[in-house]
Amino acid sequence: MSEIPSNQQIEARAYELYLERGREDGHDVEDWLAAEKELTQRRDEIEAVSDREEPEEARVGYAAVASGRRR
Image (cartoon, rainbow, N blue to C red; front, side, top):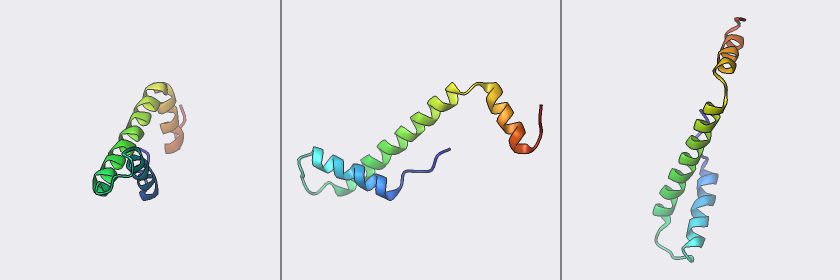
């Protein structure tokens, strides 16, 4: 699993949301939470696609190598 979005990533996306709203003040917490949720969902979607694209035999092979066993 990937790491959670960094504060810097969240801050950058929250600022983009602020700009998209026309620089309307008073939504800083809302923007922060929306940015955090969006980035986390994006990360989860990417991981789900990656998991589907990797063949099962590759995951088994990686696990064997990681544990020191070979097939």
